[in-house]
Amino acid sequence: MKTCNEIVAQVRHRAARASGSRELMEDLVRLLATERPYYSWTGFYLMEGADTLVLGPYHGKPSPHTRIPLNQGICGAAASTGESLIVDDVRADPRYLACSLESRSEIVVPIKRDGKVLGEIDIDSDRPAAFSDDDRRLLEEIAAIVAARL
Ligand code: SME
Image (cartoon, rainbow, N blue to C red; front, side, top):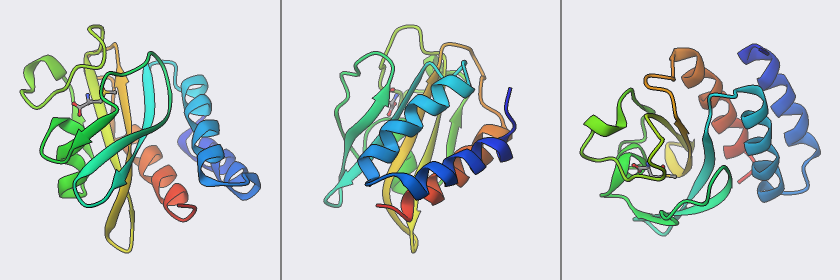
């Protein structure tokens, strides 16, 4: 398994070559699914106006949650606070909006520029408690690279 630093270096390289943010995000969801097989669903949500997240490029099964108001879901909670969120057991979290019945844990990392939330990276795993501080660090670094391109 590649280390966090190796993947971040790869992401920087791809960000420098991508022709736009959508192409970059499409590339990154595939990269993350390959490098971290326990990422069962990986997607980007982007802010539309001040109170709605809209689904962008993703890898995994289609999600019913293509638009999420900021007052709903784990996605809404992370975007509202601007802080990364790790949920070890989604079935025990009343905020959780189910994407797939197999999902057991989730991490959501806001994409911020100058303190403003522009979107987020959302990842579900079919494994309980799949996400560690290493995943948080990896995804926060990737979020900063994407923020500079949005
Ligand atoms: N689980 C998220 C919704 C998005 S889907 O997982 C793709 C949430 O609770 O906000």
